[in-house]
Length: 421
Image 1: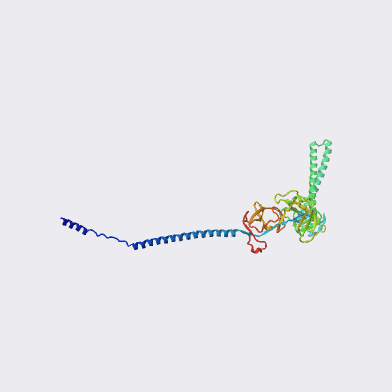
Image 2: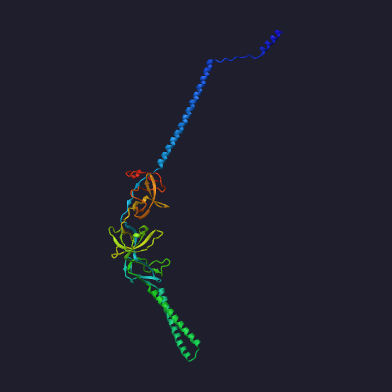
């Protein structure tokens, strides 16, 4: 039994799967460990390199952004040229433009309808008051006058008959041959005839006056400055519609000048004050007049006061309609210098009022100013500036308070300086 059991056991061992024993080589295990460590170091190095690249990129972007900001700030800075204000004339003389006008200027129209039969005075002719300028032919008025005279004669005849009848009826009434009612009727008829005669005579006088208006006469002594008619011209009475004046007459001695004084100077102007008048056509010659009257009120629209200047013109050298410059002498200013003369291209006109851009410590300061006299290319500033201010030339409309600017050197040529925009 022992053998069977042994055999059986041996048989079972022979039928089972064989068992393999794995043997690890120590040298191979060391190499594998080294490879793993080497791989970890490679990963660490790659990670470090990637991190350094990211940091470099971020730093580069940061510096690029700051450089771009500096470049944009440099480009946004305005480059400007400046000028200093010039002190205004201390004697405060006021120079204003004006137009010479005749002391009396009158267009002359016809007072009756007709045709020009003759004209006697042409432009430039000096005439006396009442002198005939033209003669009209008035056939319609002549016919109306003839009819009116005939009607007056008829009215006179009726009046005579009515008066005779009234006298007769008054006698009959004294004899009680007629009633009082009949006498009253005759009296009324006589009065009516008298009124008709008066009306007819008034109509005759009216037409006679119209006929007398065929003589166009000068209403005052002066110079004929316009003649708009010729022989045969049809003229109508009055100046309504499209009627043109026949003549224009002007009294040229003295002449008048209407000036408009700014409100800032209205207190310096007085009646009787001397006025020096100059013309560009007569250089070096000064004509002296005086302020005749003032409106004594400020026009709220223009903020000016109207002043009338009387200017003698005995020699007739000054012509009505001429453009002149009138200088009114004022008192010297005792207060510190507050008025300056600046170029007109330094002014800014905003809805808040006129402004001047002043460069202060690299920034723009928009100063409110009060404008005085206009000299053309320059203008007087009464307040808002002080000596030594740096006024920006040609300031852009978009310039703002506190904006950064760079002032170009005065010695630099204007062409090299970028224009403010």
